[in-house]
Figure 1 (cartoon, rainbow over the protein chains, first blue to last red):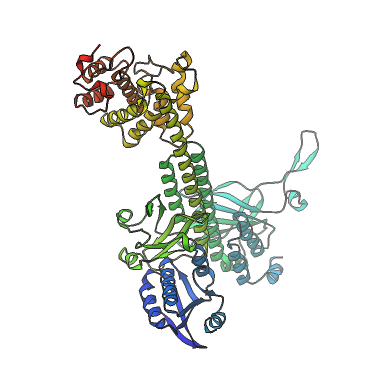
Figure 2 (cartoon, each protein chain N blue to C red; figure 1 turned 90 degrees about the vertical axis):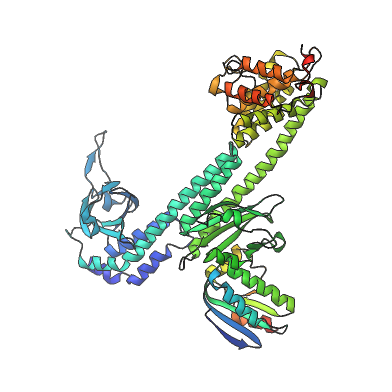
Length: 112
Length: 526
C-alpha cells in the first residue's frame, strides 16, 4: 500500500495514504509486521493522509498494538481526523490504541 | 438594479461554499432550504424565492419551501389586488404562490413564468444523472425572459445547488422514515411487540440505514444469552452468510469484548476477503457497558466508501437499533419472570385439591401435542403450551366454586397476560378454552372461526385431562371412551379437525394422559 517511512528521533514514522479497508489489510499487516520487529522498535503511523478506515483496518492496528506491547516495542497512531477519527470513536477502539494529535506529538511521546 | 446588485454580489465560489456549508451535520432540513433560496435571491437580485420539488413518478412539482417577504411587508401587500372586507372596509390581500404546478417541457430551461405572486424567473435544478429534480423561482421581475447575466450566475451555482437539494431531500425522507420506524418500535413495544416484530423492525432499520448511506449490504448481529453473536437480519450479504459466518468471540470474524470497553474490530480479515467484502464497518451496540450486538455496513465494490455524512447517519441508526434491542430485551426478561409467576399461581391452584395436582402441566403438554397434530404452526403450538400452563389461573381471581368464578375465569386469566408481548394465541386460548364450536360455550358464546385456533385446541386438551383424571365420584376415563366422546362432540363442542387430531393421538396412545386413563383400564369405566 502507498506509504513512505521517515525516521524522527529514533521513531520510524510510517506515512500512509488512501483508504484502509479489507483489500489493503494484508499489506498493512505485512508492513507493520516488518516495522515492529524488535523490543527496541518505535513505530508511529501517520494517518493524516488516510481517507477512510474500516473495521478490518482497525483490526490490523489493534493487533499491531498488542504485538508491540507483547514484545516491549512501542506503537502509536497520529493525525487521525474526520471520518477516520470518527470511526475510532464509533468502534470504541480510540481508548484501546495510542492516538496522538500530530506526528510531532506522537514522536515526542514514543521517543521519550 | 440587477447590474448594480451583481457588482456587489459575492463571487460564485463563495455562494457555492455557502450552499455546501448548509449541508453541515448541524443544519436541519429547513435551514438547508433557507440557504438555497437565500443564495438564489442573491443570484437573481430579487426579494422572494420559491422552491418547487418534483414528485417522484408524477409530472408535477409541489411547493416545498418559500423565502419571501413577510405578509406584513407593505411592498409585498401593495403588489396584490385590493379586496373588500365583509365590514365594508378594504384591505390588501397577500397573493400566494400555487402549491402545485404541472411539469412542462419548458421547465428544463431558464424562463420567466407568470404566477399569482407576479412574474418570476424559473430555473431548473438538475441532478448529476440529468434528472430535473426541482425548480427554483425568484421574483417578482419585469422582464419577459431571464437575462443572460442571471443565467450565467445561476450556472455557476447550479451544480452545488442541486447537490444540496438532493441531499437535503434524501436526508429528510430518511429522517421521516426513521421517525416512523421509531414510532412503530414504540407502538409495538407498548402494545404487543412480539419477538417477531423486533426482527421485522431491525430489518427495516437496517434497510433504511443502507438506503441512507447508499451502502449495498449490511447485517445486524445480536448477542444471545449463553451464546455468542447471532445474525438477526442481513441484506445484500451472500445467501448462506447468516448460517455460515463464525461470530464466536474467540475465533470469529470480530474481536469484541466488554472487558475492552466494547471495542469492536475485525479479527479475521481473510474471512472477509473470502466473502468478497471490500470494506466493512461494524459498530458495537452497547447498553451501560454491556454489549448487545453489532451493526455492520458492508461494501463489495471499489469506490463505494463511507463519508462523514454516512457516519452521522450510521450513528443515528445505531442508536435506534440499540434502543430497540435493549427495550426488547428488557421487556422480554420481564415477560419471562412475570409469566413464571402466573404459572406458579396456576400450579398453586392445582395443588389445593389432590385430584387437580398437575392439571395445568397435563393440559399444556396434551394441548401442544394436539395443536401440532391438528396442523397449527410452531408459534401457535407454543402458544397453546404456554396457555395450557396458565389457562385456569383466573379461578384465583374469584371465590372458589362460585358462579362468577366458573363463568369469568377465562376472561380474568386472559387479562393477566394480554398486555405481554406474547403470541396473541396465548391470551386468546386462555380467554376461549370454554367456548364451544357451535356457540354454546362461555364466557362470550363465540363460535367457529371466532374462536382462535389455539383456543379450539386447548378446549379439547382440557376436556381430555378433566375426564381422564379420576375424582372423588368417578374414575378416570380410558382412552377409547375419550376418543368416542370426542367423535360425539365433534362439530358441537369441538372443532372437527381438532377433535379428529386428538382422536388419532389417543388411538396411538401418544398423549400423556393422567395415569388412570391408559387404555388397559377399561374396567374402571363408570
